[in-house]
Length: 432
Ligand code: LLP
Image 1 (cartoon, rainbow, N blue to C red):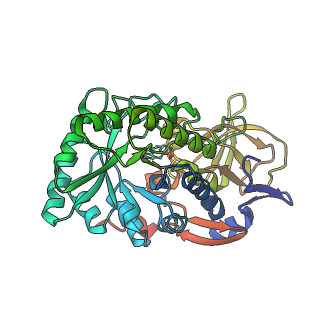
Image 2: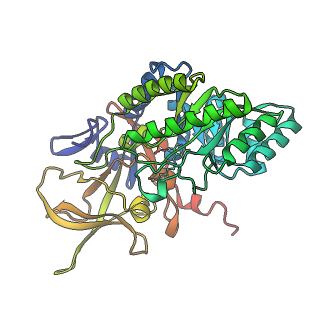
Image 3: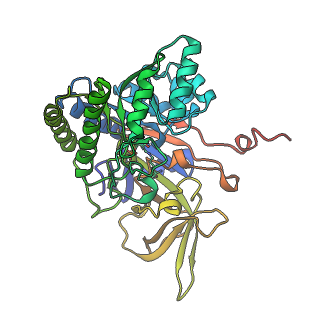
């Protein structure tokens, strides 16, 4: 099996120790299942690797854009991680869940004055400042409130992370951050240091997502430390924090590459220590912002088959009761997934068909050319694996389809974490 939390027992698919068929019956479909034990296990991998990496004060910050709901901030808080938040919505959810907001890092390339005020009201620990305008606006607003706000400065190191274009963010022409190469980053540092209501603690970059090439993180560290040395030389200021962002890749199908995260963290930290010495700067503490690698393999989505259309001589379709509304990743990025028939996982799978959703749009494909058992029919259950990251968080109400619930499973037990949207939820804001 793709992961150790997925198994087949008595001819049925089990996830996180729970029987998928039972859960589908209890909660209905489509259904997101999230394995709490797996999420905690993933958090602990990061925590122990960073605690023992030789750079004191290092920590992991969960990029909550990967999957944001109240329950997850509680888990993250308990596991001792920080939270990367990118909007007032994520800040509000984290705050309501009781997340310790001093461990929150507010990211994003366009924080409105409203967002800035809200984040300050909520006591967000760090702002990851993206541009000159934000530095000016935050300084002004913090000044009015009589607070001194801790910040990191987001820079673009100019690295191509060998990932797909939509998720590459560290290149010079990115919309995020200020470029080192053009000299704008050092100007932004000078500006931040001149502001009396801001306390610059470090620098941040994020090269991209789905990175399997471990070299990418070494390259990022090298460029960032070189920049830290330039800051010391030009401004006489030493950074305390080096945030290398997120991006570790996750396996979605057999045969896909893998990256040993713990090993990579240990060797990147070792490299940082060595390089800092060479550059005669103090070694900063390290921050990493994993999103996908915390939640992706902790999630599956379960659907019920509605129709099996065989267009003789052309192609076949298996339609289910969800679609691009709960998983837009194939439509957006052509992302690959592993698909199983949950009630017949052991039957030979010889029928090739596109797994499609219920939206009125031909592009509503969850996964093309999936192999299903010949006997697949209305009422069967299909499970798409590795849907824990960027599925619920990118879900929409296109075609006024309600979003599925999230059920947390843990060692065979289950509990509702997000309830299914109702038809009334859909018209909540409509003036009738
Ligand atoms: N930090 C920053 C500043 C980010 O922009 C991101 C992701 C992360 C951390 C977390 O990266 P991760 O560890 O999850 O790769 N919707 C796309 C992914 C977009 C990623 C955006 N930024 C997808 O479904 O593949």
